[in-house]
Image 1 (cartoon, rainbow, N blue to C red):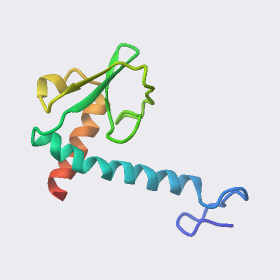
Image 2: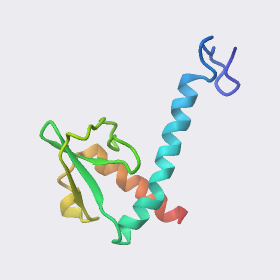
Image 3: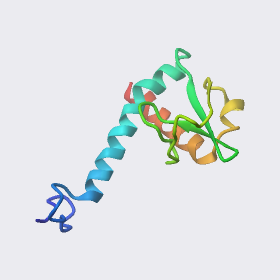
Length: 110
């Protein structure tokens, strides 16, 4: 079977193209962040920070992974921060860039 979107062959044991499915999943998780980030920007919620290998990452809302793609487990230490530039400067550069980008999308969409 061939994917109607990207024209790649779909493996016989799957119902959907793995690359297209991963893309749709990423877009859905990213869109899910909008409502939560609007709450953070308004000061009614806080960002979750997890420490992994001496580096602080921002956890996505509703997922056990960071904005930059690091997978978390419950054993990773958790703390919370507000939308404060001095605090955001102390987290992973890639997480910070992505959360600011998605927060910009959330402002425009909301």
